[in-house]
Image 1 (spheres, rainbow, N blue to C red):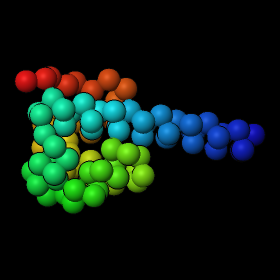
Image 2 (cartoon, helix red, strand yellow):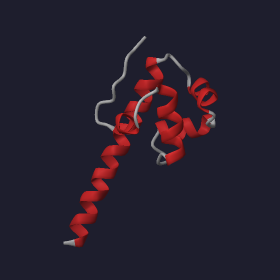
Image 3 (cartoon, rainbow, N blue to C red):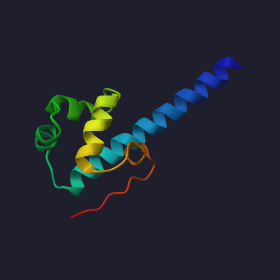
Image 4 (cartoon, rainbow, N blue to C red):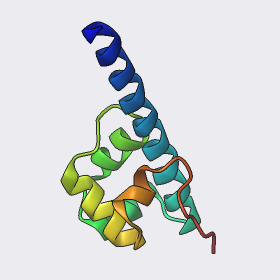
Amino acid sequence: KTIRMVHTIGKNIQKVKEDFILNLKLLRASKDLSGKELAEKTGMAIKRIADLEEGRVNPTLVDLVSISTFFNISYDDLLAKKAKVTFQ
């Protein structure tokens, strides 16, 4: 029973991570920003942005705050299946 629950939680976490990656890419594209420009505007390292977009690392709370603040969206929207993205 415990193994099944852990497996289900792991699948849910993976899905949230996939949604975050897609949302980050869409949000960056909506502002027509390069990874370098987003890094400069959020105070994050360009490598961190690239690692987040490629799924090599999980977002930290600091990452979520920096990104959601810059794009003026909630953490929920950043992690949601369908983020509220408006293209310019």
